[in-house]
Image (cartoon, rainbow, N blue to C red; front, side, top):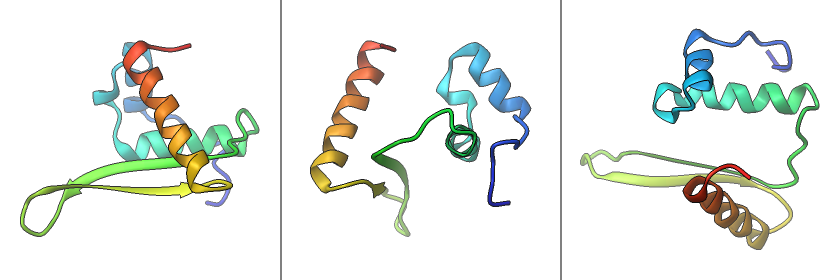
Length: 91
């Protein structure tokens, strides 16, 4: 599927949205929600940074990222702005 604009919302996604609790989302649900918003035209990000963590082969947690945008400074600024929103709350 190349267009997620009409992708159905999962039960977990609905529950997480109503409860406002990130722990109820799966990473896949969060990505599909983002793709749905992009493909439907609801949002049009100029910069996107996706961060995740997972254990390496030794079991140590490691952090990774993928980024799309004009330059690294825009990506860093987006991460910093997102940190503020996460710590302080929605705008």
